[in-house]
Image (cartoon, rainbow, N blue to C red; front, side, top):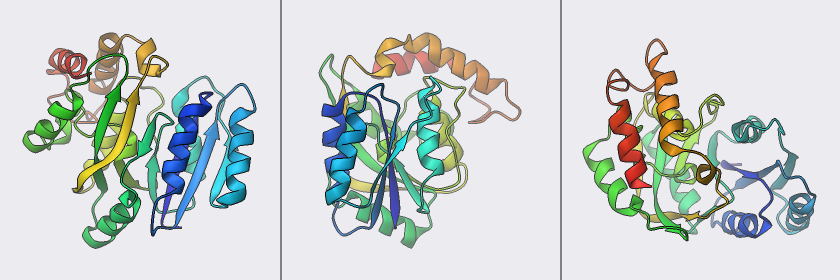
Length: 250
């Protein structure tokens, strides 16, 4: 397999179905799909089994069931058979049918640490500023230390990376950007043209149930306390600015 897509699932079969189909219909690429299921019912298991009958590269795994969603992410990553990985949440979906093909080729030809595909955010609860802020931030603030202020990468589905890393289960609001920063510290980032990923904002999101400012500030304090700082020396000094900007760009 050229690339593994890990899809952490929790209930919401309607979201998962669209996500899975968008991955399974990627063109001209050998993909492994792993669904890690933390659901309380068997709906995801049964749906995945039926889909696997038509797409044998789809695998179902019972989730970590630890109560921490990040454990479910890492559980799937550890089971991947490919050297390239993509973590796609069930409320995300691939819009470009050749996104994975283009990402695999870019990684092979450039030796990059990661590939970024642009994201369109569709938020049913409020207007999202991400599509305006992220492109500007990505051009002006490529250094990884800027990520805690404005997540210019976007959702994990926009970030193809090499195997061998796990997400930090001790973080909440900044678990994604801390991971991006670690990866980007090892090499360059290649950006693909066009919109590759769709992300749906909805009331059931985990991030909708937490205080974004309080959780981001707690994460920033935890990161700043590490030696050396995980993302950069400006992190601690910029913590309050970071949470303000992140709250504004939601």
